[in-house]
Length: 118
Image (cartoon, rainbow, N blue to C red; front, side, top):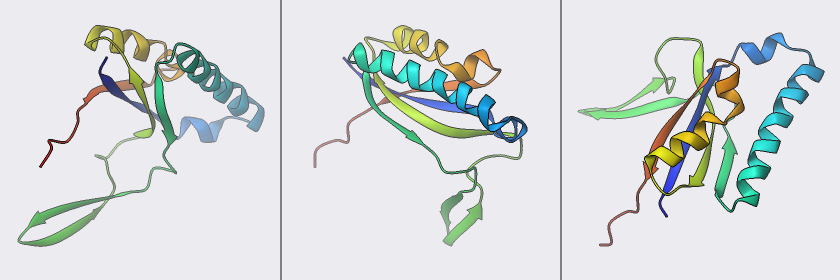
């Protein structure tokens, strides 16, 4: 079965407006979701991105480094999961169970491909 990357997009300011107890309770929803995916043998990996600061590097003549990995706005990629799914529809069903979706965030689903062999 193919792997899919699930990029969790959410309002990063939302997390600053909660008490530590509220944040911990919300985080536990992600832990339970990850444990479910692991028990189903679908979870390939999960990473939290540190903050929302980043850089974008482009080559147009000389290399150019631009602050921020995203367009202006309050929604940012906060982390990602790599999951195994039979197809796009199943990957979307898995993404729909993400706690971010229930709280107004979104999950971008992307197919993971192998690099061609040289």
